[in-house]
Image (cartoon, rainbow, N blue to C red; front, side, top):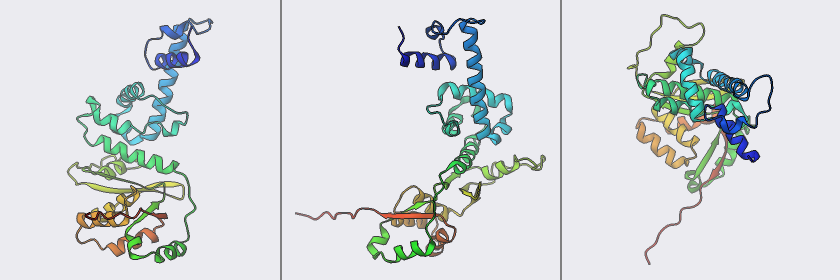
Length: 270
């Protein structure tokens, strides 16, 4: 006899296109036989999850058309079904899936377009935070010693995302918005982009940043120390004005808080 856990696993497998025999016996008889009832539920699950993906990836859908998107979405749903009930978080792995999906290999820019769309999607759903007053944060930072300043690890606005692509995915995204010029074209050789995505008010937006500034912000957002982030940013762009780049982080309200990394213990010879 199936346990509840066994039945749930069997039902999930049946709805995702697997063997329905194990669960058919547990389906109560009705006007339709168990296989037909399962087919209805299976269709509903796939249709609903495909709609969730379309909502998160409208530009990807427009680029490949509805039929191909449905085909790719069906394969993704089978490979990576939801693991939690919050459907707005479903689809996080879709860009990586597209990168490895053989029918998409002729569209090398498509996964990065998907990554931009997912960054916009998650920025909209990121938790809101009460940003500290700039003067309060500045006073706390000013009280640090020189050694402590190098060990700063900033916490940034949780809606902020950073992504880079060798393709002009920002222009591709803009060219596929409602009301865009249908005759507009984007050359894939237009150059790489380094983008910052964030929520402002109730809308997610993005903008392109110079490489040095993007490197600084991306490393800080990833939890790297101020010292390490500044060093990498300066290596990426030797002409970066670090003082101006740091000042912009404050004026644009990106910084939420900070902590200090532990003091590194020096190794001394015996």
